[in-house]
Length: 384
Image (cartoon, rainbow, N blue to C red):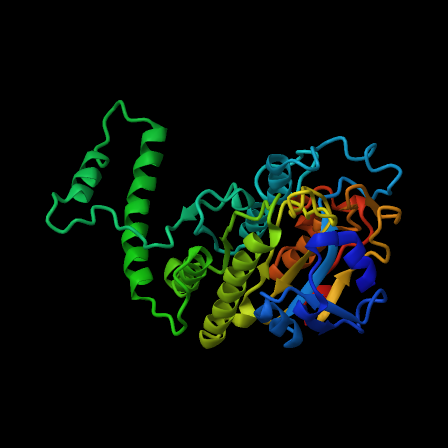
């Protein structure tokens, strides 16, 4: 299989001596040993510590397909476009039946069940967390700003409260809602500013894009009780992986940044006694072509390999089916090395939603296209 991998990847294949070996004898029949990219030692270590599970050949699917019929049964989306596939992975609703993102619908289901839920992004707008019940809180990882923060400035907050407190005969229902929400926002801003800045981390995070985001998430987790939340969902994002040329030069530092951030995050979660309460899910809109292009890069494709990690993840295994033929003549690959996924994203989200507390009666709401697949996972498949 390694020779087949080299043939399929061509000039962008990793050398065998650069791979970090993991043992997959308990979960895969294709190979007993797999290789992890040499810039991901923490990922390898979390796999070996049984905190991380790889998921093989996963992607957005309208329904299960074959090499012969995939075009016919994927007419509701543009498979290889960044914008549409980013939307699909955020919403998990290929037919547009529901509103919100997959995380947002999970929060809606939990809120209906009596949980106090939070949706927090440390990377701007977060389509996966769009919810009807849980407002999105966006926090700048460089620091949380307090309203009217300049000490010597006029106390604008008091003026804003005074200007929104008066009720007249012309006041409307919407005006009352606006005033109530404004008062609530000012109070929450002041509370979170104090609690966020008071939160102390025992781990040093790198001062780079992902390091700052994971550090911010770690601090925000420490404010959960003050915010009165039972369940929080966080959105972290790193762009820059669209390597149509010089793949190795551009990918290595990004993987190094990702690996270091994950390592620091786990250390902080363990130190805070929160690691068993956390699941980290790696998501991308699609995988890349197996074969490199003329610029020693790779192009937009479909199926890819991902991972899920956390203290209660039943790790040290590979879920899904790794292809046993990586050539363009294989049953799951077509030119130029595009792999047809055999595992839908619904499988992972079904398991995570169950672990998070979503009732089975709400699963069709969270994952409206799940019933066309027969390889969905439950929480017992992903967690101990």
